[in-house]
Image (cartoon, rainbow, N blue to C red):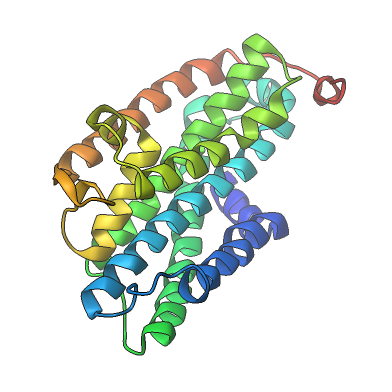
Length: 268
C-alpha cells in the first residue's frame, strides 16, 4: 500500500518531473546542438561516444534530483514515523523496502523517458540512429541508481534529524545534486585517480552509464584516452557495497528516529 502511494506521489510531483525531465531535456538539446565540438558527429563512433557522455551525465543528474525529492518527503514525515512504527503495523524494514522499491521504479520510468528523448534528439542531430548498445544493463543501472539515491537521501535526512539538527537540512538535501554535478563534470573532463573512479558512487554510476550506452569499457582518462580501461565489474561492486552499507545504516537510524519539529529548519 505505502509503496503504491509513494510511487504515485513521486510520479505526480510536478517539481520532480520538471527538474528530472524538463530541465534534463534542456541539457539534452544543449548537448546535441550547442555544446558539441566540430568532430562530435563526424563519424558514427564519435557520435556514439559523444552521446554516451551526455547520456551518462543526464542519468546521474536525474537520479540526484530524485534523491532531493525523496529527502523532502522523508523530512516532512520524520515526526510521524516514530508514532507509525509504535502504534501501526508499519515497521522500519517495510518502510525502507517499500520506498526503496518505489524510488527504483520511478527512476526507471524517468530514465526511460530521458533515454527516449536522448535517442530522438541526438539521432536527429547526427542524421542516423544512435541508441544504447547494452539496453538490459541500462535498465538495471536506472534501478540501481534509484536505490542508491533513495538510501543516500534517507541517510542524510535521518542522520541530521537524529544527531545534528535540521538547521542545515536544505543544504544536505541538495548535497547529492551538488556531488553529482561535481563528479559528473570532472569524470568526463579530468583524469581522476583510480580510488575516486572506483570509490566514489557518483563516478561509478556515471562510468557504468557511459559504458552501457557505448557498449564497451573505456579508458580511465577520457580526455587523453589513456590509463587503461576501467573495469565495469569493479564499478558495479563498488555500487553494491555503497548500497549495502547505506541500507544497514538507514535501518539503524530509522529505528532510532527522534521526533523533531520541521519549524526548526526555518530558524536559520
